[in-house]
Image (cartoon, rainbow, N blue to C red; front, side, top):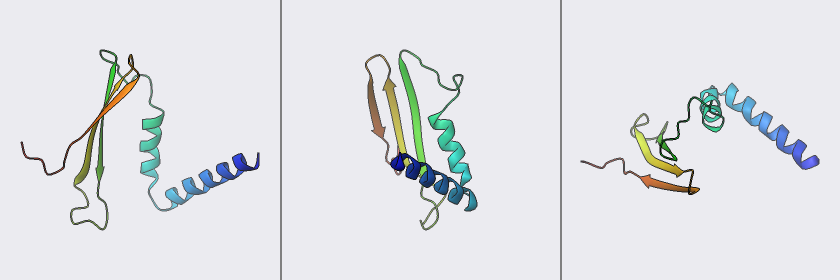
Length: 92
């Protein structure tokens, strides 16, 4: 019981700290990702495809450019996940 109480308090403190720092937009994004509405997730041919992108942020030479691009494909029928990492500086 003590461990659960400690985890709950730590989670609340982290949420308050993020909101105080103005980073609560990340909480909303995480909530939308972890708990999407049923109309937001579409399964086509037993697969769910997700594009994950990230940016460098403050302290990088180009803080607003995408520096991480990963394509995830979840096969619901086979219960497998395939990921492809795409280099940022790839020229096609």
